[in-house]
Image (cartoon, rainbow, N blue to C red; front, side):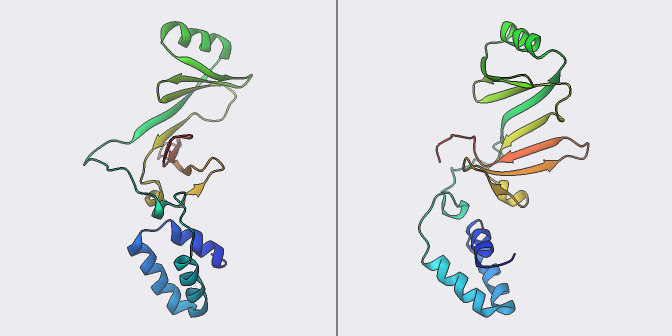
Length: 165
């Protein structure tokens, strides 16, 4: 991390224990920066966009994460949309020359032309920040890209885009 802004963003995504450990480490390495960071944290504006300021929904023990979207590659996109629409009760949410998105309630099925990038899964997990270095997307959703041992891309997000906090 390069400066106060980087440390501030990082600290805002930590819980109280994690933030205390960060401050202790920073105090030993750079006391002046630690003091500036503590001042920034003390005088911050409340913003639920930061994980540490959002009250997470209670999660029952063993409650599974939500599969938000999956993608399949198809040879004929128009035929695939027609086939899925005929056989299942779904809504065509988006369609262009390269892909189509079908809505099945809260789950999305993305159909991609064979030439498209590798299919992916999107999973909603409130624990996204604990899985690795995540980032905040333009739509406010915190996201992390993982690759499973077989080379499949898995996007983990803290909530569905457009979902209320």
